[in-house]
Image (cartoon, rainbow, N blue to C red; front, side, top):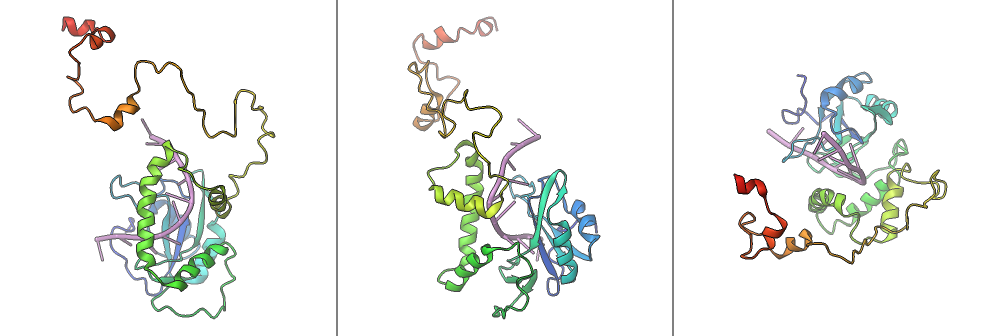
Length: 253
DNA sequence: GTTGAGCGTT
């Protein structure tokens, strides 16, 4: 009763799905229920979680019974700060069965949009057109494309932290930033209160940090060489290990 | 204990 998503989809025949993005990873369906239920009758709330960690992915699906209520919730809850984070509420474009959705309502059949009431959500922007363009082609299964991208994203998401970007063009990056939010936009690097005096090259992605003395060794280099099946007994038959790791305690122990 | 583009389960 309280927990949504525990069971399969109850009935998505006459329900409107709303996509809630930008929510915190700690936000649960129970937390969103009172918020969305205040604006209408919430049929079900589902928050996709990770299969491995089980943590929320950062977005949830709120299903409403009526479109007017859903629309109101989108207008009222869109941009609302929840748990210190602004959540973006918008109509879902895709359904659970990869079905097409218009204004949150699942359309089993691919009907042509007459253009009656589509300019109701100005938040969709050109993104809708972009996706639609791909669907129009129908040269390939978009479902697979989506899953493939998702998969890459999952792994890339973890690796992204270490590596900023492989080598994407400025255009690509700019397109993404522009389509998402403008909060990332910075007025000017010189506008900063602290001049980049300390930073040798703020524009540089990273400092090469070339050290003339490679110290004793680089563990990273050894990573690709071998995993060292026996890291503990990797002590070479020399005095290298002895000189750098006397291990006085080990002697006593 | 962390992260932040995006579209979903029994």
